[in-house]
Each structure stands twice: as structure tokens, then as C-alpha cells.
Length: 316
Image (cartoon, rainbow, N blue to C red; front, side, top):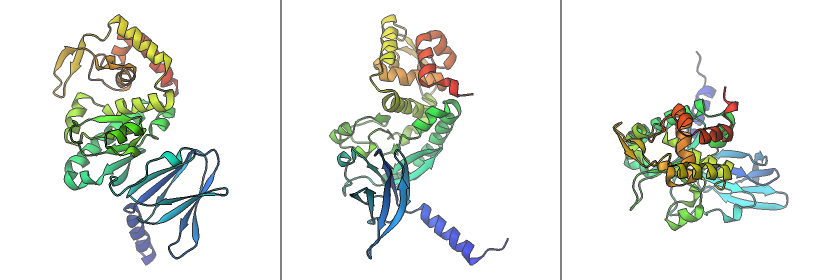
């Protein structure tokens, strides 16, 4: 194979592009907009148009400026982080502004999801982080295999974040529905409607306890973003199960696969009920019912509802 100077140049620039800061612009407006790079020496260069509901990711340089043109209106965006998301649309004015204290992220693409990794994790515990990302990939790959394709499209819209453990908080995974809660707890409000993992140090042990806890958190996102947390059928099924005492004393499994009797976490509220049952429906839960067939037998009302809400008829 003959290697030309042009080929070497292409390979070198491709590698450099992978390591450059990335700016993702999401168009939530009801019409197409156009993005322009503002040249430092003056003038502008088009980065193309973004259709309504679509997005574009630009490889850029920190400090470079862009403008979103929407008819006569122009909105400026400055590249200020290695991985940055900007939503343009009716709610654009309320989105959090980047500050010098805002976390910096390294952005990865894993199994179709965008994963934002806090650079402090890379600097402090890179081996554990990389192992956690491999385990995450296995969980996401399973989701793609077992969840209906139409639902996977929605789940892949949910950003994933890896962060260090916060002071006064234990290592965990969580879906964040509210930017207000994040601000009140000194967390990055950019994680609104996203899933955050602060459990890198115990990721492997958590996987033994809950083989697909990413599915649990993404089920919360599906409940909120697609179905609505006020979904009356989920609430009704939860109240029926609670009144029947179906989950008051069931087996639960720890990270060493030891089992004991306990009240199911699903009875915390309707949100956890939906997420826990979705784990059993598609994968394996850490509380009984552990599997799809056990859920079918133990809670036929919720089983039928999950078939409907996840639209499993779409999966061969």
C-alpha cells in the first residue's frame, strides 16, 4: 500500500480533530437556523443549517465564537469547555451560563450515547474510570438489544455524565429532572434531564448487584421526558400494587449475590416502581421480581402496562 503525503496529512488532521473541543448546538426552535463561525480576523463562515429538533456538533477551539442566525435574530455562543452543549430555542435564555467554576468535560460516544466525563476523574482515577466505561458500554449494548428500537432512539437523547463523588453524598447513579435542584445542591445545572454517575469506584460491585443500573436511570428519563412523571396509568398500577402488599416482603440481592427479605425499593414511589419493574422486564433486577417471567407472574397489571408503554411490539 502506497502512503502519500496527502494520506498522512488526512490521518494526522483526523486524529487532531478527535481531540479538539466540541460544541453541540441543539435547535429546539420550530424553524431551521444557520450557524456561522466568527473569524478572529473578521467575517464569518457557515457551519450549516440545523433543522427543527436536530443538532450539530462542531470541532472547535476554546474561545472561538459562533453565531446562530434565526431570521433577523442573532445569538452568539462562545466555545468555553472541551465538551459543551448549547440549546437554542424558546428556553435558550434560561439555560445555565458557563462560568470559570463550571466543570470541564471530555466527551465520548459510547454505543450511541453522548457521555460527558469530568476531567477531574481522568486526572485522579483514570484506570477505574476506563473500567467503568467498559462496563457501561456492556449495559448500553444490552439496552440496544432488548429495548424496542423506537424507545432506544429516545433513550439515546439522554446525556450521560461521569463525575467525582460529591462531599456529603455517597457514590451513586441518578437521573436529574430539574436544573433548580442541581443549582441548589451546587451541581452543574447543565445535567438537567441527564443521567449522572458518581459511582466509578464501585461500578463493578454495583453491576454485580444490578446488572443494568443504567437501564434503571434511563427508565426514569423515559418516564419523565417521554411519558411524563404524572402518567396516571403508572400511578394507578403503583397504588394497586401498594394496596395489595405485593412488594412488602420480597427477596433482594446484594453485590455478592446474597439474598435476604426486605421491602422492595419499587414501593418508594411511582417513579421507582416504573424504573425497577422496567429493569426486571428487560434485564435483571436486584429485588424480586428479578426477571421478566417473574414480573409477569407476580404483577400482571404492571407487566401489561410496560408492554404498552415501551411498545414491545416494535421489537422482533
